[in-house]
Amino acid sequence: MTDDPSAPDDSGVPTVSCTRCGRDWDLDHELDDLRAGNRAVEQFALDHERHTGHFPDDVTPWIVRCRRCPDGEQFLSERPARRWATAHARHTHHPVHLEAPDDTTDTVSPDTDGSRA
Ligand SMILES: [Zn+2]
Ligand SMILES: [Zn+2]
Image (cartoon, rainbow, N blue to C red; front, side, top):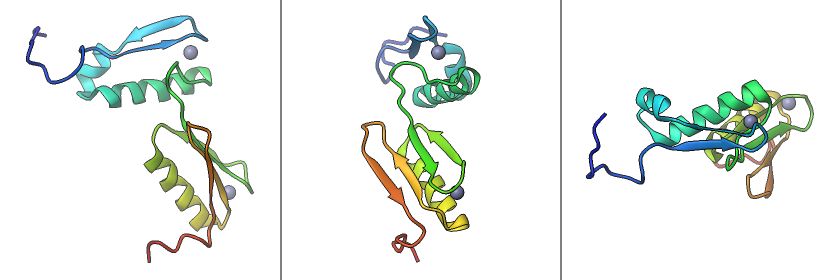
């Protein structure tokens, strides 16, 4: 790795910390593989959640939860969250509750998705 002063953004290696675990990590290895800072953080966060049941600091997921069945998921951005909700609503005809990181909520219901033919 070279120390290139003309590197496009910020300060290089993204770090993630988790107060619940009392640890922090820098993601240069991950970054090597994925070549995208956001991806690396996202991937790490999902991984961390899978192992520990919680997300690291500064990572607040979108939570989608079906109102009719135990199905649900967590996502780190709106698009896949909505995609999941819409797909679930469409396939099962269940209304799906969507919770944004800023605490706003929304419901994707099977009937109101008329936007795309
Ligand atoms: Zn943790
Ligand atoms: Zn459901």
